[in-house]
Image (cartoon, rainbow, N blue to C red; front, side, top):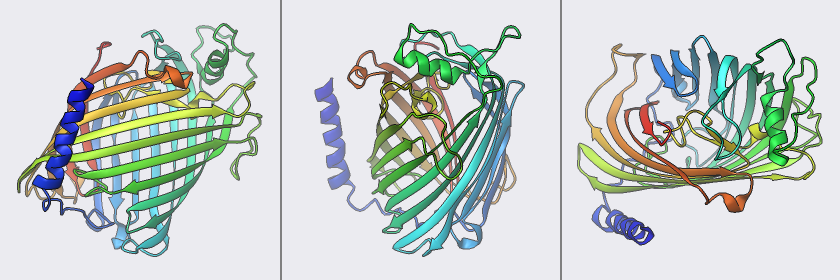
Length: 400
């Protein structure tokens, strides 16, 4: 099977280099979307483990031609409510067409849980969630240096989280937060949960360093090329300017991601692309006697990785994931949405139909990542607009 996969990849690389040497001429400029492209998308979403969510997304892209974007979300049901807003790419040095530029971005998210199903730690955790409730707030600021007109990016981010998420009590007794329970189980599964503090709130602050190299035909809707992303997230007792961590826990999370896009067959009004993705994330605890906050760790399941499983179905310290998608893009003169299903002046550039297959695993120890791999498959459809991709995927796994 591995030899067959290698032969397929080799054939596709040869095809991309020799059969299609002049077709990859679609890299859009830095700003990507049209100037002042706005969208208000009333939307319905179903997320396994959360349920049906009603709300929508909004945004304005390439504001006044500066390359700055603003976007927000608001979804809720009787058990779950998420709202957030972000401002992306305020240029401090240079502009969207400069070979070198510096930008500032920032945003925040608030989540309220009346009752949310979460799962125990590990890839062998039972398929029976337990409910949690509470609130979670996340705030982040990012500065970024760009080189080669968006070909390479070096980012520095500070973040702050504030949560009071707890196991939903069946009576009036005080139950420790699910994060604390998971931390304890990670180092000693047989241990009892830690004693809770009255009205305790878990606060944390840290840093992230990110390097991205983008050699694709388009950063927004890639159909040919290579992209690599490396992120180092650090938590230290000193915290950052938003908060000083009260714990002595000190750890790093290193994630590495590689995406490869190979054209199979292209015409003027359609193309076929094989998209492959590899992701590996590991966590290192600098203080071996202090448990790690698992929210800084890794998870699989949901809308991004392992789409055939519920949201955050598998969590642990280390994560392995890889996937393949076969994408058929139907390119046409669809024009603007014109207030049809959305209030928008944006342009619909293509419809994309997708079939995907994914495998992944989580583990407490790195050497166990390749044992007991989970897999799933599915189909999807995407509306490729100049400022946003609207995506609908359905995944299937051995859990439904």
